[in-house]
Image (cartoon, rainbow, N blue to C red; front, side):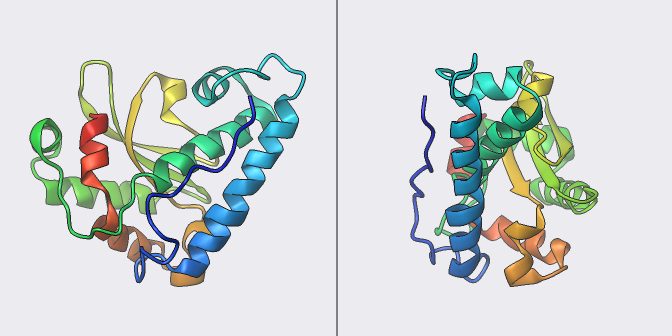
Length: 191
């Protein structure tokens, strides 16, 4: 199976000023494309040659895992964002967030704290377990909650290439700004 970049549901400048067109161009158009090209080359002639991305993430290791998980993580991240700013979770997800964290604001504060504290490069995730219970997990490098049997709902990318052009070393500012462009309809549908 050959992998390719997902089509973004927004123009590359649509997330400004939170994420600049220049950052999207590099992050999506260069970094993510490199992972795609690498994985396509790495899986050729292996047991993963005809596997879907979820299977590769759950069953591989080493360079194949790293590239597959980075594609999965980035696709999930980019497709969780929207140019329609200011939405909020609704329905079952909103109730689950209130039950697990007390309120949306309390959840955001806890998520921000966890995600800012990822050492080096990685990801902050909102996940649910098989019982529907929500939690926040941190993953380093290409880590993905699928490998722990968790169901990802939302992720923030804290690799420097995700924010350095716009925020330099101000990771906390980048994370705080991302809330304005989370596509809560997509996240709620995942729940």
